[in-house]
Length: 290
Image (cartoon, rainbow, N blue to C red):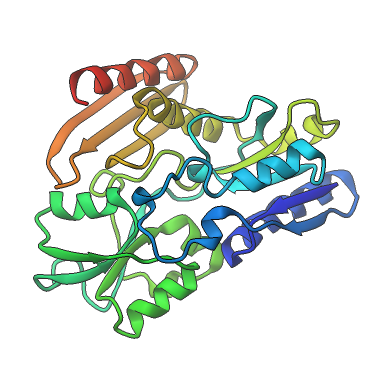
């Protein structure tokens, strides 16, 4: 088998965890192929100023369709709302933490007025404003360790990042604060990985053994809301869901780019109704708010 991945340290680390698990199951060596995506080539633009559909996945999808690779590993939140109809999400392993974290020499409450926040996320910028932070934002791209270094060297006063990536790279010592997931609500699928294959792949059954059903239910419910709203990353929308036994609670918070609260919907339903409930939430947001 050949796996395709982006070349960042986080991407290769995430992919290696999947490779290790599959090699243990199959007893066979898996080859890793690094594929550079459009998103990797754009270093200094705000993501919401780019046509971001599939920006981190398109080249990997093409390699899957052509047979150049047998499967690919993505951060679930990087997947476009609509997938290529030749490809499937074959497995979503157990999810990592979904929280956002502050990287700064300041605590959240100590951030000075007009502090420079490094971010290319309209959602993170809007949540800062929602909580009354008078900040200046400056585009920030690059690998996780690069972004941390830029803050610690004073190029930015702070940045906000995903705890999942920090944990996977063992960089927890750089975290100033961990935000509650309802305070700065993460994007759909944060903390989850998606293992993609061609729908007719001979390896689908073995790769599916890595699937964690509750994580899959949560991630797909969150993605369904985004698909239904149809706003991509151009609007500040945070979505979280949590499975508890046979139930799932789904919450979606939608802000304006200026940080005004437009909608906050929270529903609890049975796990087997997760997708239907997510669609209903998405429809309500689309029709009542946007």
